[in-house]
Length: 140
Image (cartoon, rainbow, N blue to C red; front, side):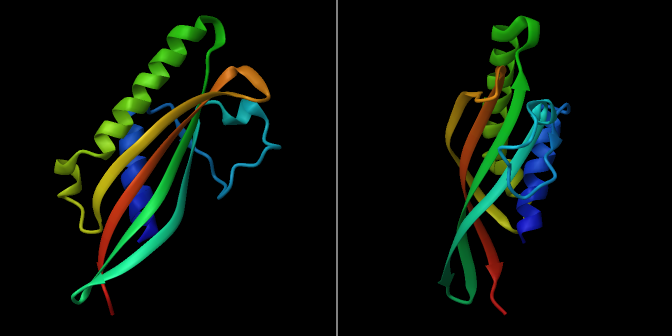
């Protein structure tokens, strides 16, 4: 079930920004070098709240998507482009026509996009997108 959420996000992220590669740890640690974070993304699937509707189960889960981009020589332009990619990801993830093709993920609501400088490198920007996802599955 969780892998279906992760797969849905991975598909959209690859479509919008194929340079982004998944960070391969469950948590993002402060001791990871910023050079290893550049062009990486991290998907954290948080708390799941479940309720029953007749014989089916529905749940709402909070998901945080973080990715890092380096401004390098053309900082404003590169960060603006990354911000536009974040907006495009949010819109595509919430696209109901995509969700209608999925048996598990029923709805995606993007709640916010936050951009901040990385604390260890002022050329590296961290983008964080927050989502609330509704999933549906049958009880056993």
